[in-house]
Amino acid sequence: MGSSEADEDQLLKSFLAEVSETERDNEVLRILGCFKLNPFEHLKLSFDSAPDEVKKQYRKLSLLVHPDKCKHPQAQEAFAALAKAQQLLLDPQERGYILDQVTAAKEELRAKRKKELKKDSASKIKSLVDEGKYEEQFERSDEFQQQLIIKVREILTEKEWRRRKMQMRISEEEGRLKKDEEETKEMWKRKREHEEKWEETRDQRVCLQAILCKNFTLLAITIHISL
Image 1 (spheres, rainbow, N blue to C red):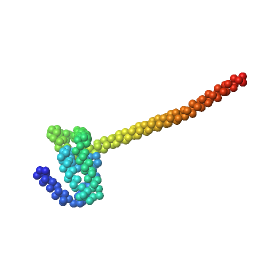
Image 2: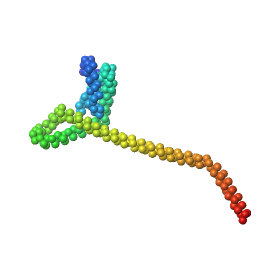
Image 3: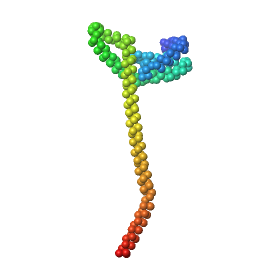
Image 4: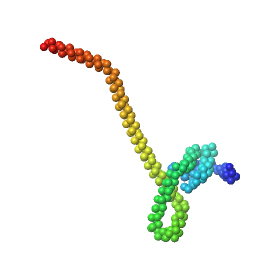
């Protein structure tokens, strides 16, 4: 560990030593109140945060709500939520999926703003004069960032709902196929049992058939004599 990292580590420990129990409890409540599908919210990070920032922020917040240091009854739950958030953001596939939704949210907000600018001549002129700088500045504003968070929530919620409905349909189809398979197995089982019983009674049928043939022959002879 380099000197700068050691200094930062010591600074973090000093900071955490000064944190009151109330602040730890409030952080637990904040984490548990976050939108569950957005790990960036759990870690209080912007969508453009790099993996190294994710690790640093996770370490800071996890120490803050660690069950050994925080007496809140749900500290373990908050700690686990942070761990999951870090895992998702460090997984390239999961991170990529979330950022794809962020991109989609930005596009929706930009399209909406474009329509609004057409109605507002002054803003449209200023946007043209600044050669796009006006829009770039707006997207860095707290207003846009808050809109983006809300829009990302909407998109992630819709995606998750679709995923769950698809999973439900898949489960229903799997259940139907399993039922059909069990019914087919039962049908073949009954058929085998019937064949086995038929085979078991084969000697009895042969014997009965011989007796019937013999009786039929005797009956024919008796009728012939009578005639």
